[in-house]
Amino acid sequence: MRGEKIIGEWTIDVLDSFSDPILNVDNESRIVHVNKAAIRFFEKDRSELVGKSVWNVLPKNVQSILDFYYHKALTEGKPSQYDNLKLFNRRCNVNFYPAHNGLTIFIQDYTTKWQTEELFRLSLFLLDRLNENIFLVRSDGRLFHVNNEACRSLGYTRDELIKMLIFEIDPSINVKKWNEYFNDIKKKGSITYESELKAKDGKTFPVEVNANYITLYEVEYYCVTAHDISERKKISNALEDAKAQSELYVDLMGHDINNMNQVGIGYLQLALEDLDLDEKTRSYLTKPLEALENSSRLIENVRKLQLAKMGDMHFKEMDLGDVLKEVQSRYENAPSRHVKINYTPKHGCLVMASDLLIDVFSNLLGNSIKHSKGPLVIDILLTIINENDTNYYKVVVEDNGPGIAENIKSLLFTRFSRGNTKASGRGLGLYLIKSLVEDYHGKVWVEDRIRGDYTKGAKFVVMLPAAEK
Image (cartoon, rainbow, N blue to C red; front, side, top):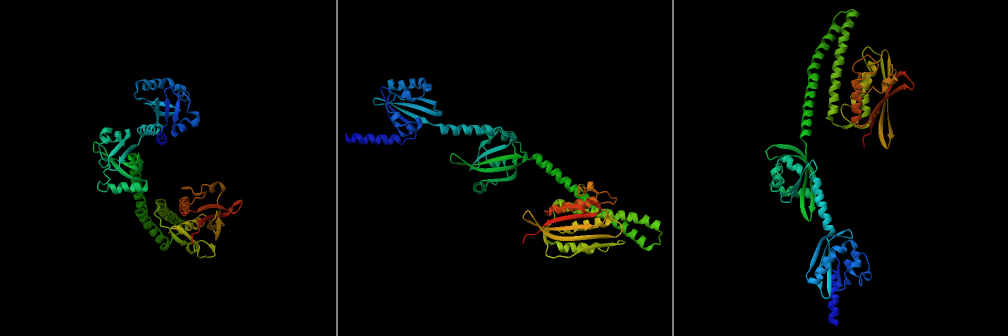
């Protein structure tokens, strides 16, 4: 008796070790034993199952389906099975095994596996409908799966591609360094680079590749999404050509035309200095001289604007106080004008800028002189302020000139705007100022020197972030 008890306990332990539900029923269809997995599956206590008819435990909608297989195993003494049964919203195979005085019902719950397979099939379905070239590559470089777009782009059938290696369609991948390449993706998780794919007809097309390391059922893969960038390359090349052509024009204007301007300027200056001219004749020569000087100034501004827009400027620490001092000395002795520039020099006011910083303030002072008549006073004030937890150097350049009308202020820094004056070149100079200041992560604006009365002069404000110490 003790031996039978031990064997019985051993049998119960074995049944409880199974992860799938197991029910033992007698010849009267009464449940005599259930394992732990069955208790979890039916969500009932053992006492609610043992002693009950199996037909009272199983849902009514499956009873008529299982009845045939149940009695077949019971009467014929042979196992029977019903596959793919939806039981309590689970996917199951139900097996009936004849046993002593009854049956053992083994419910194989494969819901998780079924969901995984369904998800995998759905993933493949979705991949085939993406307009991107997608490859699933095994760790040995062999193509495991390709989507429809990849087949279309490369001109191969799916059966042809899955017999090929990734090196055959992406020549940029070095066969000898494949393991090193694969391990690099594994380490980083993903990489992005530009490459070319080679089609069946031998033609290549540029792609942007996003490669990701993945594992599926404990197998390592390299998942590639290759986006065709042929159109982007075409546009990029066209832009590069246009850029090169525009640079050629600017270089031509900046060098050859400016040289011709200088010849004209030189001869006009000699004529004004050496010839005994009356006022009327002198004015006739002064006007073209001014036009040529303005033309040269415009060319210089275009070249500087080109540098700013191309991002070719090299930033470094510059002392804003020293820059303002140099600009003051450059303009305080304007020919045939009485110009007074008030500025108290300061030092150690460091900002991150390029050598074109001096052009910001040269243009401001030059405009004040050019767009005014008679005696002129320009005040320059340099202070440091804090705005949004950032220190800025604030430069105020104000004059007692004709000022700038309110309806002009908002347009002043736009390209080719010239305010309400007849002098040429003003707008591009101010556009250059705005471009440079914004490149230095600062800001610039204009106000009335005396609030509410623009006729009393203009006040330009430039704010530049202080260099971190």
